[in-house]
Length: 367
Figure 1 (cartoon, rainbow, N blue to C red):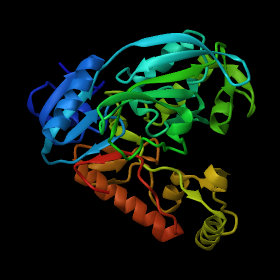
Figure 2: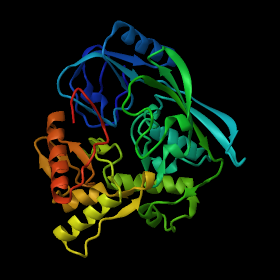
Figure 3: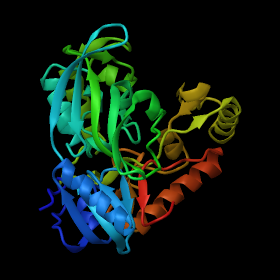
Figure 4: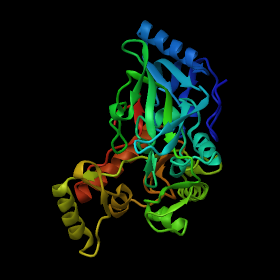
């Protein structure tokens, strides 16, 4: 039996299994064939079998960053339910002690964060409450509240589907960037496990995110106990409907649907001019340091000022009533969700000339 996503209908292996019960959005048509892999050997065998037969393949972890189309999905869906954690001693480049924790791809992510904090290991605490499986975290460089897995990932072991061999990719080979990595957008590497270098300290890293600093009564750059940061992050996420809760309709989301736009100097100047023209000289878009010398601005800020309020609905989908950046399913399918997403993205571009890019992975449907 496939362990159900908390708060979503249980799905059973077999033919024509609705994938809606295996995604946090609760959308997705039936799979032609579903295989549940609870150990690494079975996972590798299932993937190799589909590849050898030339069948389409979707590897599904926690289903938290996935938009699956409403129609039947041809081929195999392999559900990753592998488990296991192992520790080894390590050291940072400056010689500082680290614990190298290797985690199986199917381990639920928040349980991994909770265990690290309980064991007195720091480095993941600000990533609390994020749904999904561990194997997905390096693919899109999961991040929140000023922390991202790129800060701690040192190795990812994968099955190279092109050659059928198992190998390891180091942090440099993964080429981490904002919500991106060398693994994103490609299906030729199957993540088997991830190794994190964690600090054996009860203190979390320096607080980098203003909202979190205010929540714990700290200043930016302060070191705060990891356990305190975890509880604060969970409270903040819960207040935004970003923690899985079967009683909360806002929980049926993929988290933040759009990434925060990265702008070069010309793009930032153009945005500021459009904001001043549309909203007046006193309105200034928030700006943060981004990758490659670019500036990052807030997608949520743009969405709200383009006229989209929390709770704005279209068909069977709506903007979360708690968080503008989350799009939620309200009984509709992927088509309703995409119609709403395009309405929001088109509205922001028309208002401010900035293109929003979706964060989830699309399967059986195109953006």
